[in-house]
Amino acid sequence: MRTGVANLPLHYGKAPRWLFQRMKELAREITIVIVSDLGPEEMLRKLADPFWFQAFGCVLGFDWHSSGVTTTVCGALKEGVKGLEKDLGLYVAGGKGGTSRQTPLEIMRVGEQLTVDPQRLVYASKMAAKVDSAALQDGYQIYHHAFIFTPGGAWAVVQQGMNEASRYARRYHWLSEQVTDFVCEPHSAFCCDRTGRPLNMVAEESRAAREVSTAVSHARPETLVAELKKMRELALPAHHEVQLAEIHPDRLYTVFLKTYDRQPQDFATLLSLEGVGPKTIRALSLISDLVYGAAPSFRDPVRFSFAHGGKDGHPYPVDRTNYDRSIELLKRAISAARLGNREQLDAFRRLARFAGEK
Image (cartoon, rainbow, N blue to C red; front, side, top):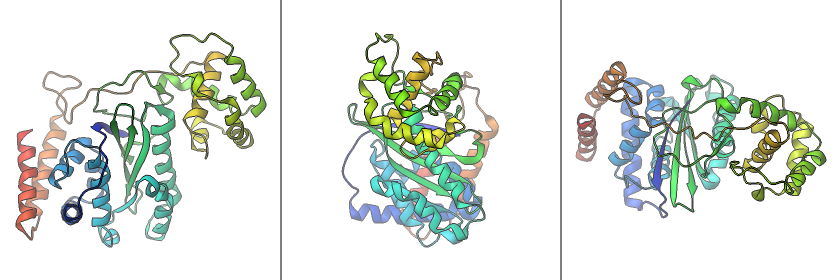
C-alpha cells in the first residue's frame, strides 16, 4: 500500500557539513529510541507516514518545505544507522541518483542476515519504483529511492520524483504491511493537490487495459511498430491524454522484441521487465485502447486526506483508536528516551510540542 504523497518545491544544493553531521547523530538517536521501545516495524510505519516524515525532517533541522528534506533526511538516516543495522534489525538501502540504482545490490549484500529470500525485497523495491514512474505517469520522474527493511521482510519505501517544468518534486511513501497487488489500486491517502489526468494503469478501471496490454505485448515487434505508425495517420480523439507525438515506434522495437521473447503472463510481470518504461506502457495502452477498445484510466488517484480523518466526517470520520495510538506511541517514545545532551532534549521537546498542537 502506498501510504501518502507530498508535494515540495524543487530545490538544488547540499546540506552544509556541520548540519548533516548533526542530522546523522540525531536521526540515529531517535531511531534507537523508537526501535528499542516499539520495534523496527513501527519505525517503518512512521517513515511511511508523509506527515511524520516531514516532522522528522523539521526536528532534524532541515528546510521544512524543500525537496531536499527527502534526500537529506534519508541520507542522514542511512548514515546514522550504519554499523548498527544488525542490532537494530533495520537496514537502509538506496538514495539519490546513481545510488538509488545500487538498492538491489545493497539488499543482496545483507542477504545472509535476513530470514526471508532477499530477492523478494529486491522485487518489492523495483516494483514500487516502476509503478510510480511507468504505470502511474503523473509527470514526475523518479530520481531518489530509499528502501528501508527488516530481517523478517517488512519494508517501507520513500522515493521522490521531479517535474522540472513546474519546479516541484513529489514524494511517494510505501509500506509493505498491506500489499496485495502492486498493479491494482496500490495507492492510499495521497496528500497533495490533483495534477490533471495522468495515465493511471494501476486503477481498477484499467483492469481490461492491463490484460489487453499484456496480451498485445506477445505480438511480434513488427506488428506493434506497424500499428503505431498507422496511428500517426489517424485523427486521434481529443480526450486521449496519451500523446502519440511523444512515442517513436522504431525506438521501441528492441523493447517489443524483449516482451515478445519473454511472453509475460500478467501486467505485473510485463511492468517488471528490464527496459519496459513509461513510453512502452503508453504505446501498449494506446494500441489496447484504439485497436482493441480497452481504454485505460486517466483518473488521478489523489485523495484529499488527513492523518486521522476530519471532524465533519470528510474524507472519513476521525479514527479515534488510531488517534489515541499515535499519542500513546509518541508519549512512550519520548518517556523512554535516554537523552545525552541538551540538543537532543530540545529536539524531542519540539516534537512533543508539535504533536500537542495537532
